[in-house]
Amino acid sequence: MNLDLEFKISKAAEIIQSSKFVVALTGAGISTESGIPDFRSPGTGLWTKKDPMKYASLDAFLQNPSAYWERALDPDGLGNKILDAKPSKAHLCIAELEQLGYLRSVITQNIDNLHQKAGNSDVIELHGTIYTAHCMDCGTKYERKKVLGWIKNGELPPRCKKDGCNGILKSDTILFGEQLDPNTLRKAVDMAKSADCMLVLGSSLVVTPAAHLPFLTIQNGGKLIIINLQETPHDINANLIIREKIGNIMPKILEKLKKL
Ligand code: NAD
Image (tube, rainbow, N blue to C red; front, top):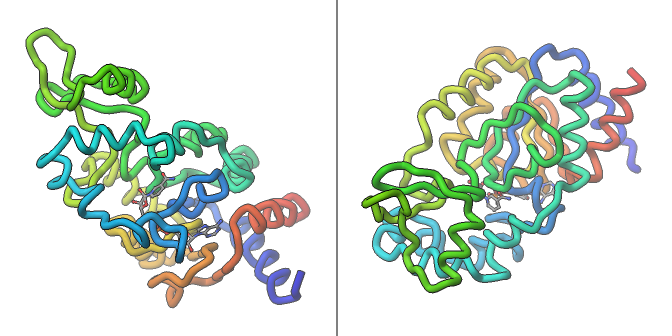
């Protein structure tokens, strides 16, 4: 390991140890090590191959909900990759950070439930979850796996089974052009404002409002650590930037923390 990286790992451990309210902000990059592609990594990112407005916008869904749900059956699609995925070393380290008492909360842009599967107890899902769907008319919730079963039996688009409702079902994930749940956003904003250290892990920090959250921590005098393979627009504001794989770096930071 080069000296510069070793220094950065020690520095990250020191910042975390001396902070009283550490919050992690995670993005699709933390789940690439679980086999789920992100959106913007060069070559492998989904949006380097497809137009997001065609596949993941509210307008596209409303125009043709059947096409959206039909794609959910694709075994190589994002939805099925997520349902099959297991937490990576990176997720397990973030859970351990909470168990050791260093981490207060995880704000995630991910929809894959992997922080909860890893053992984190306080996870704010800014962009919702792929595990459930709801009726657009009456709000009744359904497990995604159940909905996929109906689609496999030819029901397109899938519809609400509550007496007389028959509304169209929509995944509980936030699509482009859709508002975030205001209570979830309020919780994330409160966490970011309260944090004296924000740990950004695997996010390009270009999707708003999530990308504004580090500003709230910095404005309140908090520190910003970014672990991400690519540059982000917030690099200029960061106290520390580590451009390495999260799963390689977090175990080393934890090791240092345990010795401090
Ligand atoms: P993004 O694709 O814009 O950025 C991911 C970043 O992670 C990139 O900058 C990349 O360099 C970095 N990265 C990839 N693998 C890494 C690794 N192993 N270690 C360190 N860095 C790594 O993703 P984003 O910022 O989260 O925003 C885009 C949207 O992606 C979010 O709204 C999220 O809902 C959605 N998304 C979620 C999932 C998921 O739930 N797993 C998957 C794909 C997309």
